Image (tube, rainbow, N blue to C red):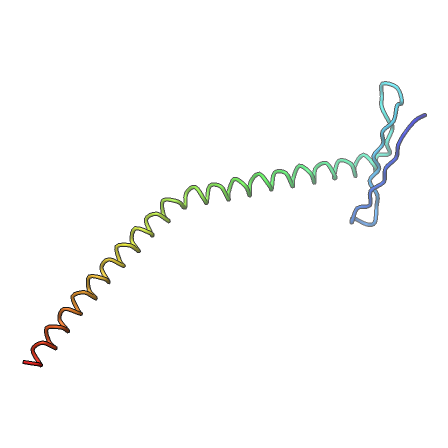
Length: 105
């Protein structure tokens, strides 16, 4: 029988996951029930991590896409506020210049 047995340690109880690649007729390699269960857990962990990645990437993308209009609105409001403050500063300088001109006369 020709097979390759790779053992990868896992954190759970110091156990090991056995990956068997064997040529053993149409049934394939025979694994102990514990090995099958550990392989199932490893595969499920991979799927859960993939699903977590997809959900987090979708959430990040939607936050960015939905945030653009709000950012543009805030920039427009900030520009308007700056223009208002510049106008108030100009008016204050004019009033100050008029008062200074009256005091010299």
